[in-house]
Image (tube, rainbow, N blue to C red; front, side, top):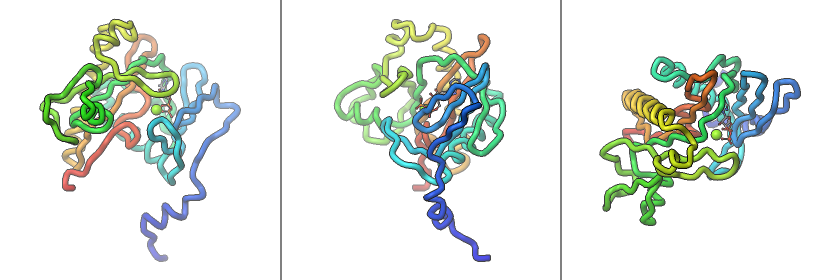
Length: 237
Ligand SMILES: Nc1ncnc2c1ncn2[C@@H]1O[C@H](COP(=O)(O)OP(=O)(O)O)[C@@H](O)[C@H]1O
Ligand SMILES: [Mg+2]
């Protein structure tokens, strides 16, 4: 048998990507941009499809993207479960996670080690992000002296909006003590992620965490340190 290279394997699968699912008996359906969600009682089944979304639009599907997403996320949830509790109950399939259905905290904790992405674009226009304006004269992709958090609202639909911490508290989106807990959790997870990546030749540039509450217990939900929620760079290049 002739060994196939990765490009060939991916090309062969271009017509067999998982675009969407339709299960009538799995629970209440919510189609996210990337994942199909089925909720029944206190459990949620999250099926990672091969959909690719960028700037809030689904653009295409890519072979194996869904399983990569779910398995990368599962990897990090397993590695960090002693640091912060998370929503995972079971991973019954490469594309599927069964999780605790939570009441979502309506704030996304975006955490950054470098000036890039939308924060760079805002900075370039002289605009702060979440009320934070980096010092004058910084270059694109430059490392911050200290890791920063730029929280955003978790919009029901459409674009999330960056808000200063004070504004999030003033609007009562979360209680102060919950906000402090999720920020602290984000710092711990991000530091762990950055150190783990560095040992493996990667930079974890920035990422986004979501949190939820079940029976009074706070946990990380959604996905962590995936290609969809994070930027990674290869240190050598
Ligand atoms: N444990 C959980 N409890 C409740 N909601 C969750 C949980 N984990 C993830 N979610 C939500 O499920 C959805 C996952 O699908 P996704 O494709 O990311 O959707 P979206 O387009 O809304 O980001 C997200 O809206 C996320 O907030
Ligand atoms: Mg999402």
